[in-house]
Amino acid sequence: MPARKEIPSTIQRSPKKAQETWSKAHDSAVETYGEGERAHRTAFAALKHSFEKVGDHWEEKSRKGPSDSQAAKSTPKRGKTAEGVDAKASKQHLYEVAKRLDVPGRSSMSKEELVDAIKKANRRATAKSR
Image (cartoon, rainbow, N blue to C red; front, side, top):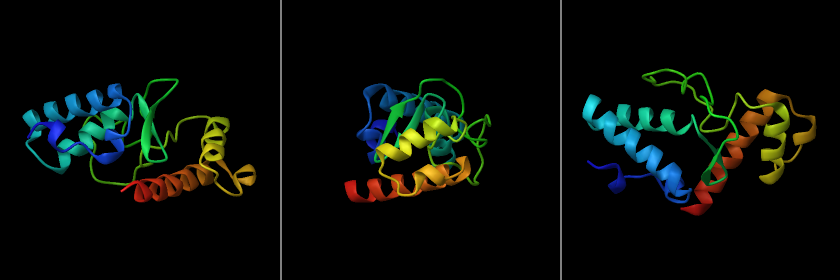
């Protein structure tokens, strides 16, 4: 099935370039692996090389590259991910994202705590947008 028919809502609210990145990767993965979860994981891994999830949408990153260890794999498997948060970004960048998302207590958080707090804020923002 063409990706345009099943594009996730967070990507629908994102820039056209993010939509195209996900769609092309998804369609290619469907040709290679067939329709299903593996095609979606592959498309998200491709998206995470250029975009990060901020709230209920995806924004272009300042540097390209995988955002977490799962996205770095050529064929991502099921497992723990940073859910679109650029976990490989600097602590300062994560702090700025947390500030934009109005994460309480962000100034005293470690890098790992910022990643977790941003993931939770992203989930809340996405749930509100549905």
